Length: 355
Image (cartoon, rainbow, N blue to C red; front, side, top):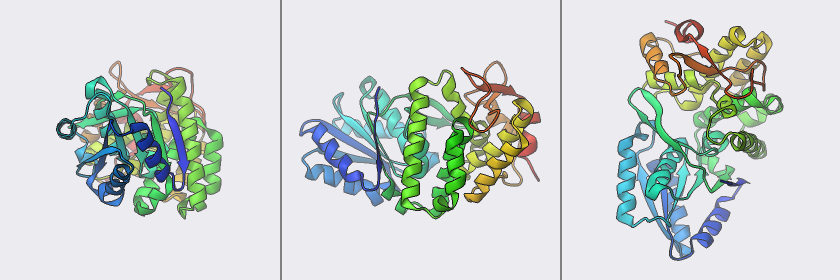
């Protein structure tokens, strides 16, 4: 499915006009947001759609990763039933990565699939989560354990929405750009190194350029492997460790910060497993540090909880934890499935557990 992608400052108003025009006066629009984004953006967005004659309603859920559950999905579906959503309805995911995952999952299963429009409000979602169609909820001990691939029909990335994003959340989003460059796009990685001071200052033009570049790069990868069966798995670099960290810490660590730590740990493993050079590993660590992201795991992590979380990772196959490890910045070691089997205790824990 082709996804219309629009990036820039102030594009939310264009999204309102385009969506209202496409909905007309008969199709129903269900906007899904967490309760924080609802107050900041979604309530006004629904009101603007209604003012244009659209049949728009808002459903909300408590903000945070802990809401990404089967129970929350069921409550949202109950709300859609009350609102009279049918197979001609459209879901709009207006929020960060959790909202995109939940709303996309709801849309993918409602009447066996209805359109979803992604309007990301966090940098992490703009750079990564909103494009590609992955949807999911978590299970106890297993992040993104249940989900679908359901491509959005449109993605509107209004970088001015990031003005309400706290600095810590903004910096955390940059980890996904570092991952994309380190795994798949050496030129993108070099541009991040060059523009890091401007990005750290949140300069609008630099941020808009980065979002557009990342969406284009990820779009090419997803188009070549829409169902995550091969080359797209390169985008999992850093994420085996990141998901285990999030689970072991009960999601006290923001996703982007967990990804940053995961990139450093998995780059260290790549030095032995794929021949990643010391210089490239150090460039990854240095860039994350310049962007204000953590490069070490918190002290006192429970070794057993980390190993258990990795053991339940959805990428595990044949009894082995698998990680996507680059051989150099911007390049994976092979075509097809780029993940390699690892001994988590030997290859990863030494770079994570410190007391």
